[in-house]
Length: 272
Ligand code: ATR
Image 1 (cartoon, helix red, strand yellow):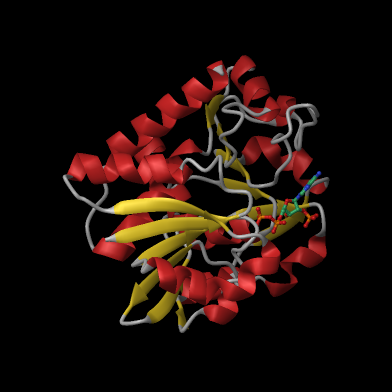
Image 2 (image 1 turned 30 degrees about the horizontal axis):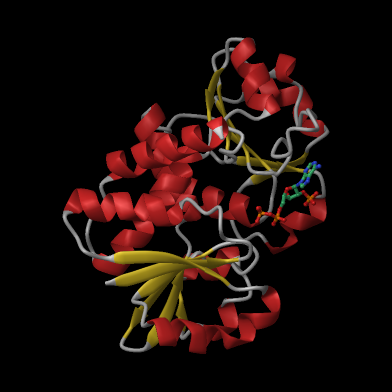
């Protein structure tokens, strides 16, 4: 089968080597390539993909929302999030899914264990947050709290959550068992700003970031130094890919080989 990822820029995408590692581990002869489609070319997406005769593809920045009008069907989850990262092409029909949220949650539970009795705080209220929260609420008995800088962002949320501003959440930070940063704060390591004050986080909590480049954001580094457990976004990347593979083929992916390959490549790049 033939798969790929579309985005712009795309040359640094780790998806092709990660999926290739999975195909190899499973003894499959599939192909997975990267396609750079700049925004101005996006209206030709149907022709470009059809010419490549793909069976499915991933979509990354900046096209996760622009793909919506080109789909014949959209999963209810992707519709709710308003973004698609996986397309299955079946009988010439394009069906859109979003595996980012389930990717994060599967990875987290695998790493941490059950989250059923945990009190969870999510920072940020964009697409990534919505995907994670809507998936995560299936696995916890407590209502999830979401903190955001701009409260009007919650206007189009149809999930039963506690909402709070980033400023107000500071006084209750110590009450959470798991804190997940879904904002881009910390992605650019030139700014070592913190989205929340580390000294107010409980020492027994787990602090997560969906970013994996750098492997430790300033927030994760500071938490680690304070003796707080940390968890970055690498598993989320691996598991979202594994979930896409399952949608395309109906088969479980070989997680271990995918994770190992991504880790190996990140290490190689950091040495370059
Ligand atoms: P994504 O799809 O990756 O979630 P997004 O939809 O653009 O991206 O959402 C980005 C989120 O990060 C938002 O919650 C945004 O907060 P606002 O709604 O207030 O804009 C948050 N965010 C981005 N930069 C931030 C910053 N410097 N401080 C706090 N929150 C920030």
